[in-house]
Image (cartoon, rainbow, N blue to C red):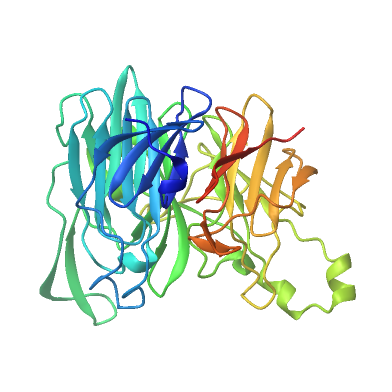
Length: 385
């Protein structure tokens, strides 16, 4: 039965990765498929919550949970971004699989989800604990990464006289948003470490399947770009190259005239092969091979020079798309802003616009379109010229 768009209160939207103009919508524990105004129910997802209750440290208590939707071919995964529940829907069979992660600072760590396709097989990377990702074979339903994850205190002392611990498949790292390379050989976790501090980590899929989180490679940037800003804008450009938008805490101390002359190199490029190993071989990292000036993102002077939004790469158009709180821009790989659509703004959560509950914009690289949903209106699309 077709459903009228005006009758729905939608809290998340994502496009099909195969068919232009097809979108998946979520609202009130239901997943819908939409083609223009033709909207049909796909599945009920009763395990997802609308209002946060007894999760994290209480900061989200009583607030509406942000929802993320991930789509790959015949599968759709819907998550409570800062909650503990997710649901995986098989579009061919209609079967729904409930997923869940451990609640430990989940109110500030996005539910980690990513689809990977390798050699004709589809895998789902999904978070099960704050510092643990598992991989699900979508065809067989088998978890391919079963292992023990533990840390145990011993009676021994370390070289500094402190307690000595034994670790098994353990990484002291909070996973967050996942970004997968086009060929599925690598993925990034856009997370953080305690105290807290943002730290993006790179994983080789084959190595992860054998040795799990201890195969982490840390992404390194200058001291003034470090901070509290995990889930920062980043994306893969090709199978071996990815880009990260850097903060710059130094701009907080500049007056307007100094800021105008200051060269803020916010666009950094990295190669997956540029791995540097420390002398004790316990720490591997990658530094940018190129950093360049770019004005697509606005660093917040009163917030450690942080940048916020989402970054995408459109391979067919050969440009980046920056979706920011100040609008969306097409950006060349040399950092030049080619075009901006000011009204296509990023929002990290639901927000009110003219008394309507509205979602921020996102971008489909497959279909070269910015999109959002506005309750009472429906799907809105915008394109760069």
